[in-house]
Length: 115
Image (cartoon, rainbow, N blue to C red):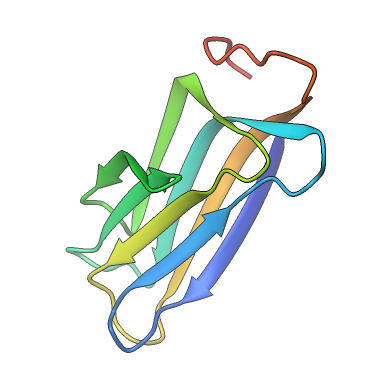
């Protein structure tokens, strides 16, 4: 299982966004879990998770939460998994981590299998 973490600094609007997308030709990501947090912890912070613009999940605990499958989330090259935080202050930090396995494009990843 591989983990991949990205972080971003919140702007003046109090929002932040992180995108994850497989970039290696021929490799898909089978995401078993994702976690999110903020520094510092902010009461009232929310986070919405979308795949290719479509709603997947949300939390009113945007400063610290996690989601785990099955089913796993399969990301093909060109897919975008987006985390969008709201209710923060300028200069805060948002952090998202994916836990995933890679599969080749010729494999049919089974999203019901825990990875």
